[in-house]
Length: 156
Image (cartoon, rainbow, N blue to C red; front, side, top):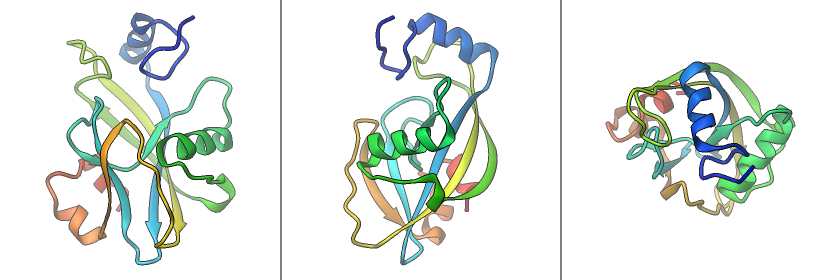
């Protein structure tokens, strides 16, 4: 099957049917620097488009947590991150009133596994196409900002 914009190997309508009927499992990367600031990206894609959000992505079928974290960190940040250096914060429900394709009537439900990772302040990070901007935020500022998505605030 053809590669599609949602990152899977199935037809768009098949993926929308899955989103309509079942939760997706994802990993979110709560990346903090040595000053305890969190890395957020300004989302270009639905759901959560137009909000600051932590990096993350779906776990693919037959992909281990370690493989998924490595792929997501490399694709979204250009970083080699190992699950052995991450701390599991917990599982979080992320329920959105829309979907990646903005098809009416289909909500998206992620069960997001939040992992905290510490990086040095001078770590180089590469921005991906899902984000128009990336930025380090103090925890206090991100919790106060209406531009930061509520699902991101739940990690802090």
